Image 1 (cartoon, rainbow, N blue to C red):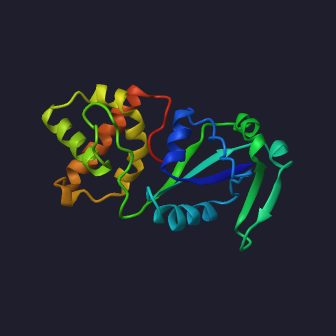
Image 2: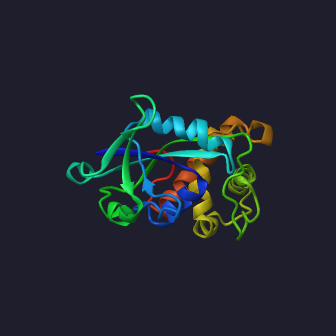
Image 3: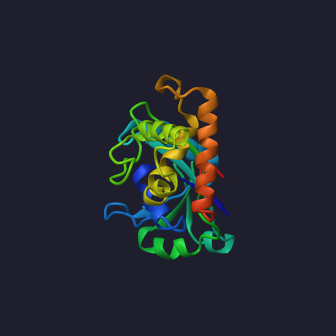
Length: 204
C-alpha cells in the first residue's frame, strides 16, 4: 500500500535523522498517526495548512507498507471522499515504522513567504537562512572560498531540508542569474551524491 504524509520542517528533520526509515513518536496529546491514501489530499494539507504557520513549510512524503499489515488498521474519511486516512494508534507507531518497505521519500514541497528554512549552528552556513545559504554556496563554487565538501559533511541536515526550497525559489533578486542558479543546483546535487550516495536529494 502506497501512503502519503504531509509534514512540517521539524518532523522532516526527525525523519532525516532516522535515516528516512521512521516517523517520530507522537506527542501525548496525539493518540493516532494518520497517513493519507492519496497524493491530492496530502498536497492539500502541505500547501494549504502547513505553509500558513511557523516554520511555513509543507513537505509531502511517500512510503510503502505491505497490504496485509496495513489493512488491519481503520480507514476514515474526514471530509470529502478523497480525504481518506489510515489511523494507527500512537502506541503502535514504532511497530508500524518497522513495516516501512523502502526509505521515506519527499515527492513535493510548498513554502510560505516567511519561510526561513533550517538554520545551522556550525561552520560556514552558521546562522544563515535558506536564501543566504544558497547564495553563499553559489559564491563559494565560483570563488573557491569555502571547502564545500566539509560544509556538506557538517551541515548535511541543512542541505537536505532546504534543497526542495532552493528548487522553487527565484534567486535573481539575490544576485544569482538563471545560468548560475542552474549550475549551482547541479553542483550541489553532485557534491551531495559524492558525500551521501545512499540518500537521494530533492524529489523522488
